[in-house]
Image 1: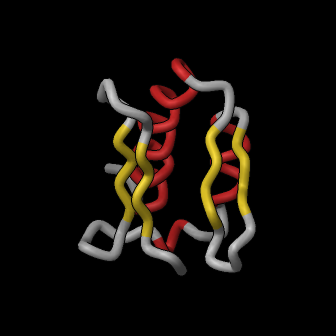
Image 2: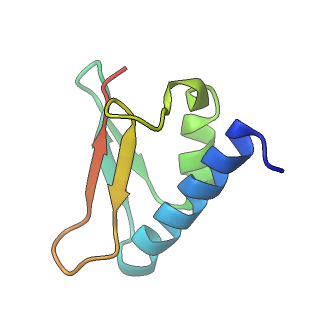
Length: 79
């Protein structure tokens, strides 16, 4: 059995593994209007380590679409 946080880390890993297969970096906009750039999965995990409780599996959660032909899209609830 995985804890909620372990499952969230696995989801982040699987999602961003695909991102970094086809991209050198990934940029998101923070809720304060500043941008955050990621260059590898370790940067992503470090960024989300204190925000895991905010990643919820419902309409206000997050979704990463990296397995498609159009540009990568990352949808997240602004917390």
